[in-house]
Image (cartoon, rainbow over all chains, first blue to last red; front, side, top):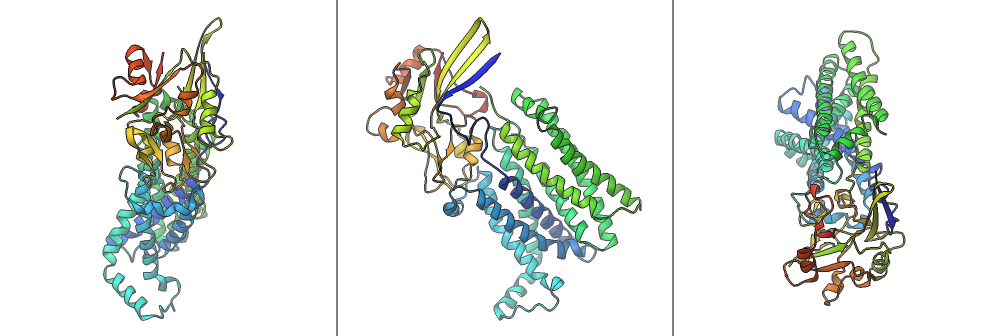
Length: 313
Length: 177
């Protein structure tokens, strides 16, 4: 038996008995950022491949969600900061080793790009839109000329945004649960599936809905594959990572993870989409909403569970 | 120059004088601390073994906190001391999450605070407050590059360990065993 006692001094509600530094703001932001990344990547990819006409909603309508999600996410991040008035210090240097620095600069690029993308398609929402000032019209013409470049920027920075939300956590080797590089691709996949689900909700076109149901199915498959590999990695690793995995395999996060993320967020929507593709009549909103819910729960559970997992010495 | 500290677990009685001395010296806000005492009980009665450690920031050579800090507020000062620059810290919490020793805390004023090895005292040629005040004289502080410093001498004579070497941080707080 080994018992560890902290006899004095450590009366620190923010640290003991386990780390308690990040609350709802961070997982909410990771979800919003991931979903925005998914939406923008899909839009840019289909635009670059010249499929704008086939996937009209995904390229031109769903991206209107992205700036809203990004701004809400940035707001959550800002609320999380404890030294708020110094936030601009993020933009006084570039620290290549810090994922958070990468993220701050990525957001600096992708947020204006998402606004520009929406501005270029504003007439799809408000047909009578007029920019009123000549310089705004000139600006629109300018960006329209370089729309393909803009799409490439959107695709690349979207991918970085989607991956960094996971890498942000995996850079913390002090928290064994987070310290796995699979979190990068897993959060990217989860963001892409939430992005595809957004189009599935917005689109009224049959062919487009069918395509996005298929995309969601493929990404759900990839996510399940990554989750299995993540646990294989933990269980074959050091004691602290085995203990981290055990939080999900019988421990305190077992029910919430397997029920909310895996069953409700991945298996159920996959099943419903397969049935829908088999021409069964299923209310179209259910499976995309479940995908988005699962994507949100994944962030919350990983962020909270990671703060419980630790080295014991 | 490489500042380090050694704590003699055979001499420490866990009185917490070091904690109070630090809180007083550094004006640590109520309810927080930069150093703390851990008591480990190992074994089954009557074969028990106890270890008492006075712990603080390990001023690691490969510091995850300095690596993860997005603004550069967490940095290395002279002798490898890890410090936080208050006016560059945005209070994001990345360094707190990255520290395997949980040595940092968010100061109520917004920035992140931690042990400084009492750099303001070292510069004047004094020892850190915790070392100075220890009634059993169980702590040794000094420059590892200087073979005649207190810490170099005691590390040559005694067996020692560091905490969580597997975290790969190369900590500079040594525990004499």
